[in-house]
Length: 344
Ligand code: UD1
Image (tube, rainbow, N blue to C red; front, side, top):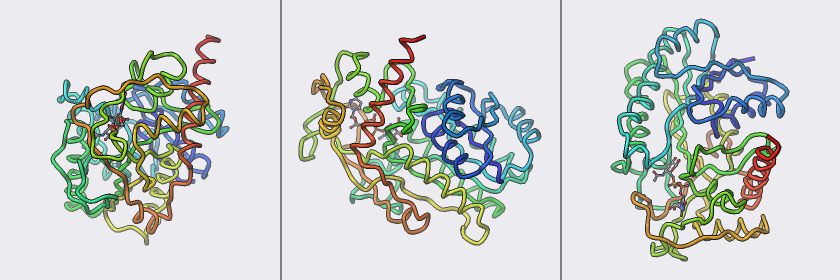
């Protein structure tokens, strides 16, 4: 049974990935400093899979503690590195926090890998590296545009750091995954998205408005060059996304398969507007969402959706869930959270 290190494993995408890894028989070690997640997530993972993953409360920026962690958990075969800050707006206000947390943690892991004989590395990147693509759907070889935020820049620089490191030392093997917009929750409603404070992202704001935690959802702009004027994104079920990580790890572990570094888009291939998301959510939940059109949000891209062909051909991966099912899962999760907080 291969042992996989998952940094940020109690976070939104991380926790769903841990479940899929354990379901496939991998042994998981989570490293997370709980800065944007909750230790209770481990209970959710255990309820779903019957296995409580090993957990280390460590900040990946702390080189010495990470070194000790590798000493303690010997024979790690691959790393999936989720641990990072991800709020675009906050990154504009606190750029050094983002550069430090997102880049130092990456550098630490890459430095520690050869010392502890870990070859394989999966990196969480983002469609943000494409900016506003000239051609849609966007493929992996589309040009990288100037980053719109320090957060986006950490993903671009992170990808470059991986390429340079592998170029200097062919010991490493890496898969870079560019996520589009992950939403939804596990079908069990034991784990899901747990944003801290007021959500920045669309879906948690929609579900929190529907349940009455927020008065009104602001729709940022209806004057874009899109059919209904609101922005278009490629919303992907977090469980579909999680499954791609298992396939990426399997590919890295297969010595024959991988070249040194490969990059994949993880999206559905389908673009939906903000207003279409709200409308579909209302249909599946039966709840009206109180929303108001307001001005554009600075830094938003007009439209982007993935061409996921390469991930399909090479990883054998496709996004299977419908948007209806995805939105329903997010709603069931939000209702479950409300029940839990009432009973506390
Ligand atoms: C952003 C980042 C992405 C990052 C993700 C994670 C960019 C271009 N994108 O995605 O790289 O991985 O955050 O945090 O940097 N919206 C509203 N009202 C709201 C919230 C959002 O109308 O209250 C709209 C936005 O204008 C956008 C869409 O919903 O059109 C999706 O927004 P959001 O969920 O924040 O994700 P992105 O900005 O696409």
